[in-house]
Image 1 (cartoon, one colour):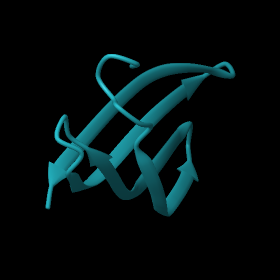
Image 2 (cartoon, helix red, strand yellow):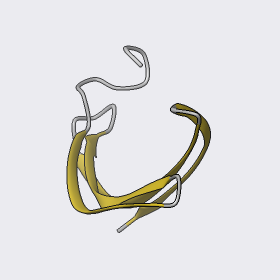
Image 3 (spheres, helix red, strand yellow):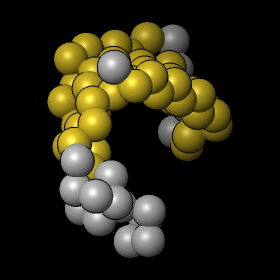
Amino acid sequence: MAITYLEPPKFIVENLIAEDGFVTAVGQITMRDEKGIAANYKYCDVWQFCDGKMAGLKAFVIKV
């Protein structure tokens, strides 16, 4: 991550939903590119849990 990100991305979680072994986070990400210009994204992460451990992850990111 140190190579990919010049600084840590900033996350805003707008909704966090937990039900039936899944947790879904929906929100915004702001990241700076190699020129230092900020870019805004919308994201959705869906985590699946089984026996207290993460069993799967689907992540979607869209530049806005």
